[in-house]
Amino acid sequence: MTLRIGMGYDVHQLTPGRELWIGGIKLEHTLGLLGHSDADVLIHAICDAILGAANMRDIGYHFPPKKGNEYENIDSKILLRKTVEIVAQKGYRINNIDATICAERPKMNPHIPQMQATLAQVMNLDPDAVSIKATTTEHLGFTGREEGISAYAVVLLVKD
Image 1 (cartoon, helix red, strand yellow):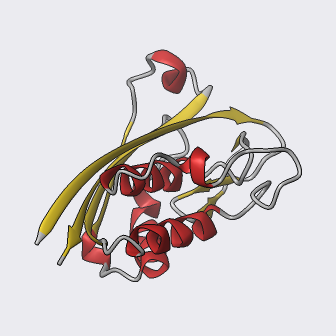
Image 2 (tube, helix red, strand yellow):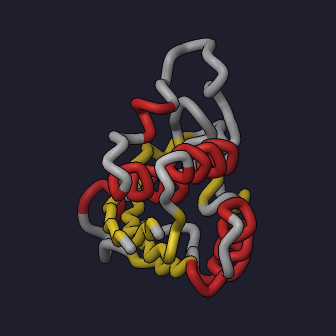
């Protein structure tokens, strides 16, 4: 059995006129995240962690952000499902994920169970294999000034 660990990080700017998607669910907020896709910062960090663990580069390599391509405004859950399929072609499966969302507002904790259930369904995992935490930066930096939201993820891949 082979075990591989990967780490992912993503950040997107908060902006008016966009929906806020985090962890595969839409959150009510006055601002949304700016990006080529739906800018789901948590899913993007998880994709990078999965791809990194398999030594398969990053999300931008597999789903390039080019104007007018098939990934423009795409639901990031589709990217996550495709990422799981990509690493499965190398014989890897996800054992578990541990992720952290960094945001001042909106508060993430009430939404974490729904995020876990949504992401587990997309990746065909037990919800217990998807750990999501939330934190603030105590009003420091771009997150503290509510200019953006970031996320970190670590994944353990298994190859039998």
